[in-house]
Length: 38
Image 1 (cartoon, helix red, strand yellow):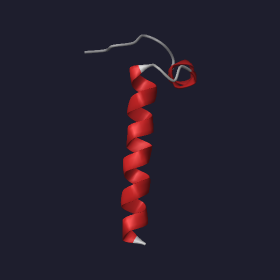
Image 2 (cartoon, one colour):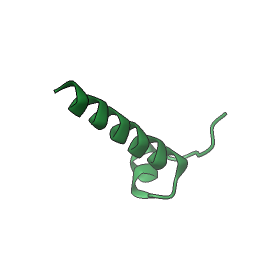
Image 3 (cartoon, rainbow, N blue to C red):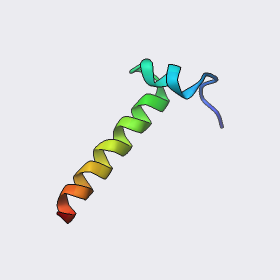
């Protein structure tokens, strides 16, 4: 289901949006796993 109807750019500007939280979590996980590989 779609939780929010807005452009990705606007959702990213809203730090409390579910999309922004999802992106932040993804970046956090991907950056930590990348550091573990190095």
